[in-house]
Length: 228
Image (cartoon, rainbow, N blue to C red; front, side, top):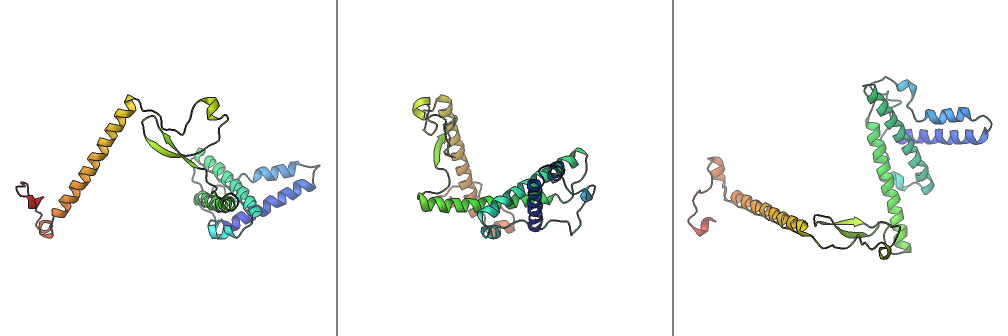
């Protein structure tokens, strides 16, 4: 996948140079750009690609950390273009009830894009911490659902402030009767789970090696405090 992306990058740069040089005749450049959204015609109908045309591994985070921001920006669009091509070919093979050769290419492209996003987030986080003292992640707010459950949610921008709309999303609202009953039943259910877990642990401790060997259970009748 690494060398394959580099080859796609070179093809993309050559296509851009061709479009800037030949402004009068734009049809070959457009045809070449549209052809990049489809796989090589030599791979059509094959169950598996040849080793020479088979892509390699995905980009790792350590390799991407050595790239500049400009290279990461170009590589992101190369991976995005490759993903669009693979998704197009996958849909074409599915519509014709055929097997797509080497479908693991989608997983490798997705892994490369996740690693690239992680590296970019690391750089943004370091920059924001140096400039503002805060990280790049949006602040978390506590949100209460209609059933009374609270969870953390990243803060988002709003078109109008809360003073104008009159609603505050990040506040604990007053629970109605249904939500209050839901919370009581949920707490009772969680209490039963903890009770059953403690009972299972106690029975497991009472089961000795001799009982396992002779397949004997614990005492059915408990009449002493020591048996608890």
